[in-house]
Length: 287
Image (cartoon, rainbow, N blue to C red; front, side):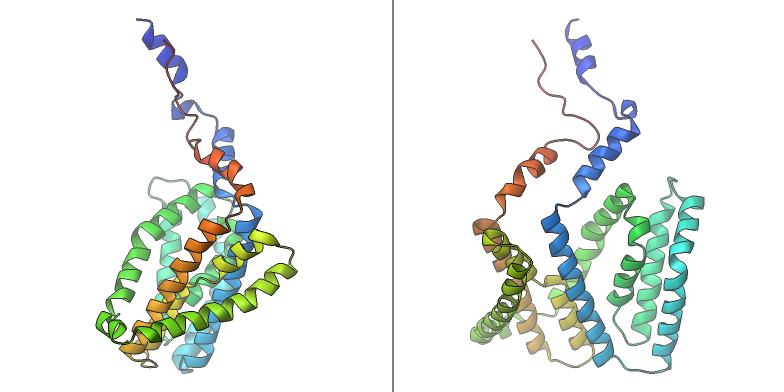
């Protein structure tokens, strides 16, 4: 008899929470600290430069390329206005029209890019830049897209990329992997560390940012797969490159998190992780 009222007082159903509280929790969880923004911005510029270099150096410039370029320019100019209108008219429904609209754009332009002989990730990056102001304000849409991307699409890509790796080739000449790994890491760290120091990131923070920005798993595999698909490299060369990319993603990340983690940024993040987006924890019941 006495337990039910106390449980009712402690439980907070989702439908009784105000929208302002939900937005505050979601915003706090989804807005990265300044260090995260700096790392993401630097990696974004680096990855975009890689995709543009692949497009300009190795893609065939034919009539298909002109069609793709023309259609992309027109769409990128209209996209902010078209997206705003579409979200206002069809947004907020159970059918998740916003997600379907974005997937249609990504797959449509990606398919057009592959048809023209380019790389599908290039229009995806530019769409993200063009729609950053529109989509970035909807934190719940970002969460749904992140779940869809990392939970469904990304694993299939890495399974496909890993299926072309020849393990016997790696075992036959392991020093080739060691040489490529050392060359990549030294080139990146020698270039990144002075630049990071120049922007005022000293001590462990500077080393942490440099190590994290030395990784390149996604675009390293994209570039290698692009070369394999277009006959620029052999499967053996692809195997060494992908193994090097994986090693340069795992090893620096492990070292950075184990030795140089900026712990002065952790307390607030750890506190937020203990909170639920949908409300406060129930806690222990009083006796």
